[in-house]
Amino acid sequence: MRQAVVFAAIAFGFTTGFMSAAAQTLTTTPSEWMEKLDREHRYLISPLGHVHAKGQIRAIDTGSGAAPSVTILTEDMQSADGSIRMRAMEMPFHVTNRRMLKDLRPGDFVQFEVAKLRNAVMITDIRKSR
Image 1 (cartoon, rainbow, N blue to C red):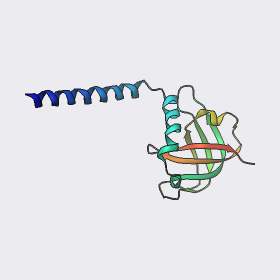
Image 2 (cartoon, one colour; image 1 turned 30 degrees about the vertical axis):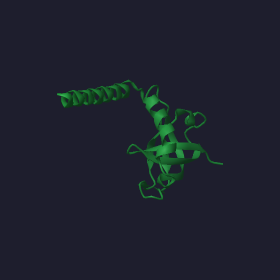
Image 3 (cartoon, rainbow, N blue to C red; image 1 turned 180 degrees about the horizontal axis):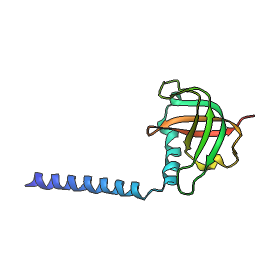
Image 4 (tube, helix red, strand yellow; image 1 turned 60 degrees about the vertical axis):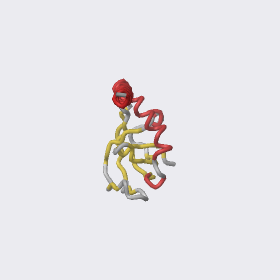
């Protein structure tokens, strides 16, 4: 009898904990989710999984409420650990923090850093080239 009570308590705790996490995920806005990724990437991603690259901005979408993105004509990119391999192309990238796009315009040449965050290649830092 005592074991049944313990198992029920564990199951209830697990279920409510899971439901709480699921509810939190559903109430997170895209911009809040991106801000969380920006904070997490500093602790979760090895420097070997980052790529420093150059390119030219083709378009910027700061999105109201949606995840911000920037379309860049890039050079070939490959991370030291091999987790990112991309040929030169024009491609939209999500950014982990919309403030990075504040002073950028289409046509600007940029240097940027990408990392693979939750199976998506995202820009973690971007600035104009000199």
